[in-house]
Structure formats: structure tokens, C-alpha cells
Image 1 (cartoon, rainbow, N blue to C red):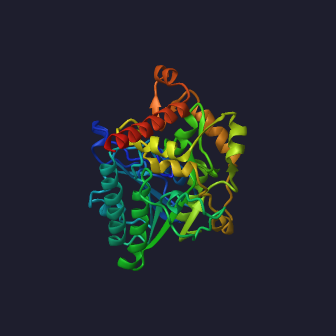
Image 2 (image 1 turned 120 degrees about the vertical axis):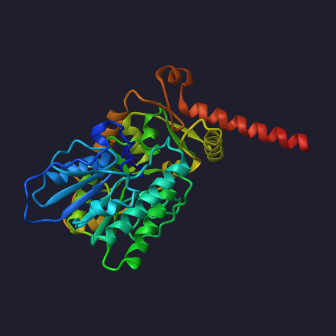
Image 3 (image 1 turned 45 degrees about the vertical axis):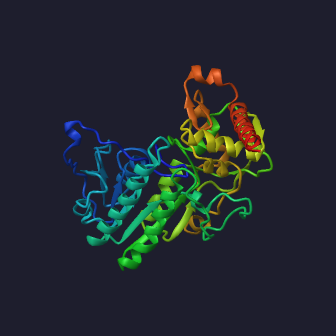
Length: 383
């Protein structure tokens, strides 16, 4: 999702100023007499585009209403061109049975304050507008990152485990607020059902701190940590969202591959060696690099490569859903996707920069060590 990670869903789409995208466009489709009318926000790109195409091709869906800031490629959908924060979205949702809200900005490069303003206001507007025009279900897509990556997490976590994440990782604060809004909405609007879908590490055209982890020449491992990896291919997320839209499942549930991979398995399957660093060096360097603006990823992102946060997907299993992808297959797809890319501590490098940087882990270690030395020198001067 460009989407999230965590993670993730579809990234915010920038407005296309071309004339064809500044007005509302509709394409009629063959009428269907059964199934729900489903509206999808963020429908022009990423997960939203994939879901819109999937639903438009399904005989179980009566009609698809596609909403975005520009018109997408799925001609079978009925398109409305506007920002999801615009209260006029209520008129565009009229007649829909279900709304799947995927218009989120989880781009690593977006200004954090602007990203939060877009994500939170957009979700508030969609929930309020849906309730106002009689939509009976809204599906929100967040991430399994909301559970938090902690050393004492169960492996796997139950889907009803406490959400212990903090706002320290990219976009996670937004996702926690979105879930809070989703819990409040049915109390404020009786009759509105809110379903929350939490994908694990999302792969397939996505760009997140977790997918960039695999773009480094060495896999950074914090000494003493216990990384575990549970992936979710976007194709599996799309089918899980379809289950939610068709009301085959409700409540809050996770989606991802069955089981998980240990760090050693990831290294063996990928053929990429590790670079192991002490926790203080790795976390200190990550925080410093982000603070001075050299990398887009805050230090909080590192926790999700240190501690377990895999989760059961039993609720989907109970209603007959099964993932088509395994963790091993998704990892293979991710490695193919990132081939030729070079990332240092979350920052994309050009080929020339990558050659100069060498092993990313070594650079992080040097920067972290330098910061420790500078602090020690300042402390000695004060004595």
C-alpha cells in the first residue's frame, strides 16, 4: 500500500490536475440484482485499485462505487472524484451498503503532521458521512502493527490481544487513532457496523520501513533480539477485504500467511547475511539519523524488526478463508521486487551512493558509535 507496512494499506493519491480528473466521471456497468453496493475510497491506486477491480469482476457484488482524487483504470466502477475529507462525500456514498475505506497516506516521505491530518480527518469524515446516508457497514484497514512489537509478546498473539503499540513507529499513531474512531462510531451512530482488518507485513507493490529492511546489503539484527516474520501478500488482503465487504466476517481480525519465519530462516531463504549490533548502538543511531533528517524512519520502526508481533488469523479461518500465499513465497516475491534497490537505515540510495556507503549496518554502527563518543566527550568537559 504505495500503501502500509504495517503497516499496511493504500497510500494517499495526489490530485491529478488534468481536465479528465477534475470532474466526476461515471461508467455504467451491467446491472446486477443481488449482492451489496460497495464503495471503495482510495480506489485509483494501490490496494484500493486492486480491490476495486476484484469487486467489479465479482458476481457477488451488485455495484462498485470508486472514490479518489483522480479517476482510476477500472471502467466497470462508478467513479466520483473528490478528497475523502470533503463532506460532499456523503452524497457520493448514498445508496451504498458497505464502504471500504482505503484512502490512507502511509508514505515514509510525507510530513508526519500532514499525514496524520489527512488520515484522521479522512476517516472521521467517511465514518460520519456513511452513517448519515444509511450505510450499514464501514471496513477500515489498519495493520497488525497496532498490537505492538514487544519482547514479551505471545507467539502468536491472539486477535483480541491488547493493542500495546505506541506512536513511535511510522504511521502507527494514525492507525491507533483510526481504530479508536472505529470503536466510537457505532456508539455515536447506532446501526453502523465497523469492521477492522489488520494485515501483517504487507508485500506486493508496497513501500514501508519493513519492506525497505530487505533492501539493505546486510540484514540489521539487534543483539539479543528475537525477530519473527509473518507476511501478507496484497492478493490475500484483497480477498480478506472482500469477505468483510460481503459480511462473511465482522469485528476486528488479522490477515496474513499461516505461521511465521524466524530470523535465521529469513536469512537462509534470502541468502542475505546479518549485521549484528548492540541495542544501544542500533537504536541510538536510528534516532539520531531520523532527528537530523537523514532517514525517514524513526527509531520506533526498529522495534518491529527486533521483537515478535505475529498474530493468529483464526477468525478468517473460521469462516472458510485461506491464504493463497505462504510466508516463504511472499518473502521470495519481496526479494524479487526490491532487487536492485539500495537502502541505508530506511533511506533509499542511488547506485553511486550505495557503492560509497558499503554495508549499511557498518555505517549505522559508525554513526551510533560516533554519537556515543561525542556524548562522552561533552560529559568529560563538564567535569
